[in-house]
Image (cartoon, rainbow, N blue to C red; front, side, top):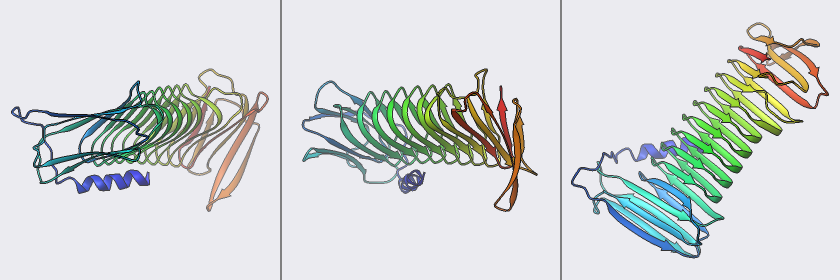
Length: 321
């Protein structure tokens, strides 16, 4: 989330470039170029939106369409030593217009994207991608590889993808849908939603809600919110460690008719929290943590191959059938 805040600060620096829609008299200018032998792509934009898609060949194709005046807008496409750098700059204040970049890349390319306010759309790319924007949204579809994306205030979504993912937003919503792999998803104040996903998942929000539906955990799953609600359906999987927690909100696991196979432990503050379970407990104990008294209740069902912990401070730790 630290990088998201840095990008948000960068976006503030370009607020002087107050853009508006192009007038009816503005004609779009188009620049198209193709580059061979590119292994690394570096994109540094200010306001422009960008779409990256995978092509069939080995070349990188770039199409830039813009309506800014040429005396206010500059772009650069520089290829050197296997690295292609794409940049845009502005000269002046209160510039009017827009710019859109469409880039077609080969498999296995290393991509770095930065924009102060522009968004990013990625479709069907295989490789390594690191992307950040101050206020723009990120939409990743059918990606295969290593992904590290963040936005200061924009939404971030990853759909139909597989690999290793680090996904974050400062205030926007983070969504993972129909994916597989290793996931670290977080938002400072926005919600985090995980659906139809398989792998090891860590999902957290500072003040937003965290939800997970129709997921399968391979080894580890952790879902938490500082002040919001953390609620998930009981994951599929034969043997995993699962933690669902909230500092001041509710922490809920819904079995949705599925059987529990493992050890279940539920925790809440004795005076201000609450534990609610549709299953009978085998035991209960109290313990001290940070000068507060907590209650821990537990039971085991089946052969005990899963380890499930549900906890809250001042909310309700709840287990539903």
